[in-house]
Structure formats: structure tokens, C-alpha cells
Length: 459
Image (cartoon, rainbow, N blue to C red; front, top):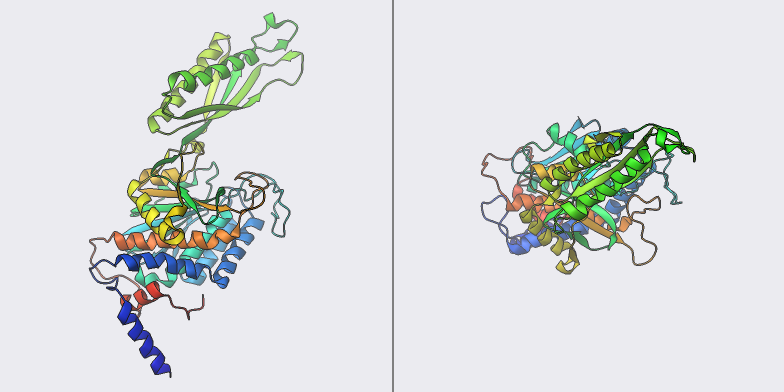
């Protein structure tokens, strides 16, 4: 009976199999289309789904801020060890970089951010934060869980990889510029392309949103201290009023967009901080203001920065004050721009998993994202993964009521894995040496499992 079972299996596979990956010929269109569907089927298995959910909840309960993600990083490394995936650690203090495949070109990367936010969670549930004043209010715990899910699938099919998948577990996305530090420390050395996703409660579950070109703006923060001469509010002639100077500064800054920027070149300057004085009848010695500025091109961003400093300094001097302007260099993120070819690749893969009607071409947004450091360095693709439920209130990221719909995990894991493996298949390298560490399993045997699924394998 065992012999008959194997005979029928081999006969079936040989009857329907396209050319193996290991040949020089391309896979058929039908075979490529089947890969994402098989990954989605695998990721929906109860044991895989439960495993991803459990990882996410552990991280959610023990959230850590940027560059403090030591326990999160430890959990990730433990899971990679269990899967037999080699990695480098530490990179950028707590970052982890894993490797799956041949160890040779081409290289494609998948990224997940790890850090939480400094805010109190107001969602009452079994796995609420155990750390006061910290919350995963942007879904980074879910990003880690889905990337580990993709890693499990890719490692299961490692002998079918025509190159190397690089797993980027990044610290400090929330204002810490963790991507820049990882880049400086060589995390993307030799990498040809990189993909990343972000969960959103603004898009229904089962749908994704992205666009070619700029998807999020360049951003920066600034603070200015305007110094005058304080005194009694009843005799203002004996003072140099920094509140009046700061007020004129704020009004003048708004003219940078309304009167200096091209109306077709979207820009933002917003003052969100104004601190000065503590009594009703005392003019203070100084006032501190602060805010953010955004633009969709490097040129516009640099021009805004220059003009912000000029306007603050000169407007303060008009009111006999002096000003010191400080730009937070660590918070400066470039424009996050999607590569057009990678966007087409994303549309094809997402279409196979979700259907082309469930792919939204979104408008660019003014929010910042430090994935921009990666996409500025090499071709990158960033997309949003919908998790909106049909009922209930919608709370966007950075809300203390933010919730993650864990039903989205199979889609995220399958999209990650599918984007990587099909990119490698469709972008072969000229490197002709045999792959490393493929063991006794041949490429052809692995291809059978990849395209038709090994339903007997326990994950």
C-alpha cells in the first residue's frame, strides 16, 4: 500500500508539473500564480495561525520603546533558532537580520518594525499591556508576528529559493530612525530590493493599498526658543515680549506653504507646541515653540527647512527678540517612494492572493515612515494591509484604543513570503555557482512541495 501511495504521488506530480525551478527555463504563468495561493493556504492552518497570534500577544503584553526592544528581540531570535534560520545580532542595538536560502545573490529583504509607543493602553482585554505607559498602538507587534510567519513558510521551502531572503527586524521606527542605523551598519548590504507592510484599520480586511512613487512624505521636527525680556504685564514698555514675537513667527510660518510653495507640490508646516509663562500678569523671558514640516520631494523639504529657520530668526528680531532654532536630526525622514517595477510585482502577487479588485491605489499621505531610508537606498515597496472589520468603531494608529484584527495574519504572512520568493524567481542572477546548504533535498523535490503543497507536513 505504501508503494502504491508513492507511485500515485510521483505519477501525479510528473503529470502536472511545469519545468522545475532548477532549470534555466522560466516557470509557467500558472505555476507562479499558484505559489501565493499555497502560501495563503499554509498560513491559514490553525496551528500556524495560533502560533502567530501567540507571538503577537506576547509582544503586545511586554511592549518596549525604540532601542529598548531587548525582550522582543530575544523572542524573535528564539523563534529563528527553532526554525534553524541563521541571523546577525545585534544590529542597531536590538535589531535582528535573518537569512533564508542559498546565501548568494539575488538578495531580497522583508522588513518588520518592533517598537511600541509611549502611551497608556485603554483597551481592556486579556492581553493588555503589562508595562504602564507603553503600548503597541501602531501594530508593530503584528508586523513581527506576520514576518515570522513568512519566515516559517520560506524556511520550509528554502531549497526552492533561487537566492536569499533577508529578514529585517527593525528597532525604533517611531521617531528613532532605526532604519537609518540598520542601513549604516550594513543590514542591506548586497540586497537588491525590499518589501514592507503596515496594518491599517482604514482599509477593509482582505484588501491592500499602495501606489507607485511617493507614498509618504519626508518629515522633520523642529523647536525654537525665542528670548526676550520679561516683566510685569501692566508695564509692557519695560519688557521685550517673546509671546508677541512667537505669535508673529507662527503666523509667518503659515505663509511658507500658502505663498511660497507650488500649490501642486503638497507641503505642511504645523506648530503643535507653545510654552511660555506661568502667570496671568507676568510676561515671560522666553517662549518655546515646536512643530513639524512635511514635503513630497527632497528639494521642497530642504527648502522648507531653510525657510523655517530664516523666518523664525528674522521675525523674532523684528520684535527685538533673538531665537535659537533646533532641528531634531534623528527625526528627519526622507520621502518614502515606491519603485514602479516593484509596485507592478506587488500588484500581481496581491492579485493572486486577494483578487485584483481588492487592490486600492491610494493617495500619498503626509505621515512619515522611516522605511524611507531603505527605499531611498535600494528599490523598495511599502503597502498597507487592511484589517477593518465590518462592525465596530475604527481607531487608527497611535490611538490608546487601537486594536489589531488578528484575522489578517494569514494574508500578511502569505504576501510577505510570496513577494520574496516570486521576486527571486523572476529576477535570476548571473551567478552560476551551485547553491549552498541545500542538503540531500533536490531542487525538483522542493519544487513539488512548493507548487502543490506538502499536506502531510506538520508545522
